[in-house]
Structure formats: C-alpha cells, structure tokens
Image (cartoon, rainbow, N blue to C red; front, side, top):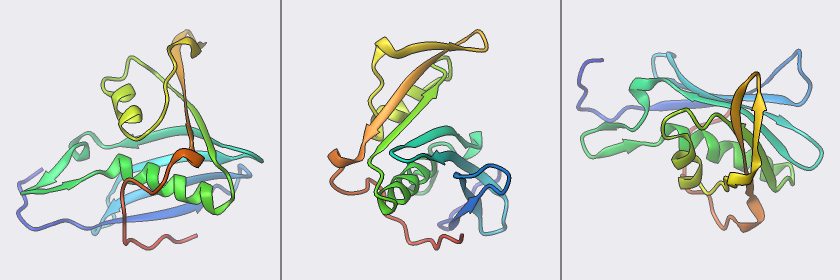
Length: 149
C-alpha cells in the first residue's frame, strides 16, 4: 500500500444475515468501498455471541501521520452500542490464543479472558472471553459514521 498523507475516512455499516436469524455483521470499508474488516455476532435473548472479528493485516494499527485508526476497536464499540440499544449487557465469545496479539487486543478493549475457560474446537485450543457492559461507563471509541440496516 502506498504512503498516504491525508486522513482517511472509513465507513461502518450494519447488516442482518438473511439466512441466519439474529446474526449481524458490521463491516468497515474505505471511501472507495474496499472492505478492510468486519465483526460477526449473534443476538440472543440475554447476550451477544461474538463469532468473529477480522481486520485486513495492512489496516491493523493503521496510522497516517499522527492520526491513528482503531478499526478493530471501533468495530467492537459499534457492536457494544448495538447490544446496549437492544438492552443486552453481556458479550461472550471465543478466540484462538495462537493468534498473535488476540488476547491483548480483547483485554485492551475491556474484555475479560479467564485462563480457566479453555476449550477445544476442531482440535484447536480456544479461550472464552466476555464483557459485562453494565461495567462500561462510556464507549472507548467515538465515531461519526452512519450505520445502515
């Protein structure tokens, strides 16, 4: 990717999966509509189940000049605001600890990762994570992008 000096704008959009009831995907794309990341989650009666979050490698810890873009954190923040708007205050999920920086990323964003919650999925070790939104006073990241349903 070539070096850029001007700030970049990202658009975040919320979509409901048609084939899976209560499943949602928030995507992040550039002004040129190129996808750079997403978070996929399921809305249950009393909690959000975080299924997957992904940001393209070149956009992780993305910075232009002094401006830092926290795309992964923003995706989580939008999901958390969605949960609160549906009166849900618990988010749970699993992640692979073999993914470099995954645990630090979740903990930096206020998620708890107890060591005792290791499970095995498809012969790979996974760890459980959760976040109680009652304990969150305000979103970590503010955003001005419009979300479309």
